[in-house]
Length: 453
Image 1: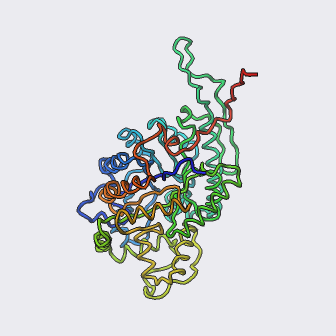
Image 2: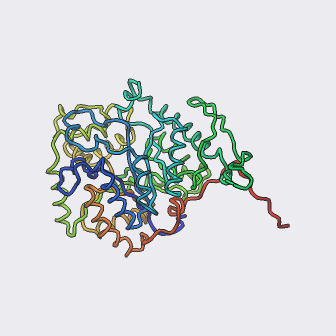
Image 3: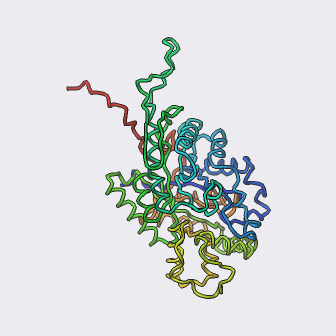
């Protein structure tokens, strides 16, 4: 059962917005990806509206293949690395959560355990880790490999990786650092525990050389939707960022994942499902439509096909396809984003999309829910998804930044509050408290013995 009837909201920190050529708009700082003030402005807008968290996607590579696409989209610049950016923003914010993406495929558990513990201390308990397995084809070559490991192998490594990180966070008990000047004891080593992990992928002795994070563990965020991804999410995830383009799809995913969570003995309110939403806000329907059309005017055909090719897994040459032909029911399986390819092909089959229609859909929404319209229309859609158990909240992907976020905050958030579906202030000190998630106990800490009879 939900502890309250208010949805959770996060926002994606992006350079120009969800539309990858939104950087061409005069309202968007052209160098925003490396401008801390641009991100701090987004953070201030979201925190002023009591959003639960800022979400920073990240990947250690250029993500596109076609040079025509790379030349025209801001996303390949990538911008500031996620943990670095959110560490900087921790000093410019007070309450909002900080979700950084980091891959388990090309990191080591000790490094990430230390970095996320550091971010949690810097922010006084507001850190979260978006756990991903690498899914972009060019990441492998940046780390001395020809190809990404097999999809299932990436998840097997990820499972052990997360267990190691959690174990490292537990190597010091919460009250191990007593810092007693009088006795001269800084740390109680009776509350220090070596990890001594030896597994298929990692050998890690420990302990971690930083105190246990204020939240116990930073909040664990995950975005998998393949069979392996859903199993991983049910086991480890606390916030799930998913793509669901329709209410029916969202309800199926929500029901299936919550059922898996319960089957593992977890409380289903300790896993929050937050689909992405791309809102195009206008005071009238026509104004919203004109905003979308303006974004379309910035977009070159190379960008349309390049972005679509990326999310379909680089398994076809869209430049050589008759764009007015129907999308086939199946494509060669990708070793990249398998769940997104499947979602997009199912959608194309249901709507009998031509390639041209599918390419435009992918570019506009990346497979997420997209709502173009007035504030009440967008709020109505979000409330419907929330009430019908398709979402516990949403990760907002403004199409253009910062104006898209500003309009959402000023026009849509009041509509949600009027319906009693979103809060007006922060209720807790840590991200876990604000999300209604329990603080994990350290397994080495013994529960106090009661003196009562």
